[in-house]
Length: 304
Image (cartoon, helix red, strand yellow):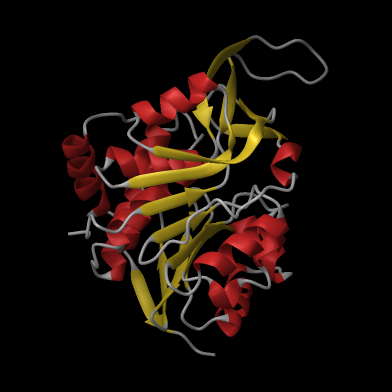
């Protein structure tokens, strides 16, 4: 069981997500009919919301929000703290094909790069600090320095364009979750296995997970290299899948399960998100247990 005295603190993005799903096969240079939905999103918020769903004590730190959004955050039992007094416009738009697969992501997020004052953020101790990489490099470096080494530092890659922000911070990170392109951009390598080697050389104690959609998952933990493949899933909506997988990874990891189980269960959670599954915590965990049994995880000793 997770020690509920230890809080999860998620730092990064919270904003409106717009989901535009095509009703038919898309035609270039023509008007295409869509179905539009919108909800509160952002990597840090999505992870915080799911951890709170799992009845874990969760805090979100981000730029200030409109009152209605703060109310939504509070309704989900997440404590919100603002890094700015001003409310800055930001949003993310995801364009999905008819099958629910993302074909284009549009990030209106320049305002996250604005300088913020962190002196009002209380020093944490013995908490799990989860960063996305939407805030400015200066802010991320300042906050990592503020929290390290008295807390567990976790990072989600967020974007292949933003992952460079942690290149010099790798020695101070405890858990790193990336997708394939983020790992390649971070390491300046062409293959995932080489990207993983690069990360290990920077920090041999850094637990790392690299995903590649439906194709494979590679991971490193405690000097072992792990490999597995997500289960086949009918895709309804790929949005948030990586964030949900990350949230459940932290949930299971800090229960101190064996690492192969942590990996298979968190991948199962991401697959359920893709399939559109939604239920109570108990049913969600039951479905994860059932689905994870079909995920075979292999491992071997790391060779440096």
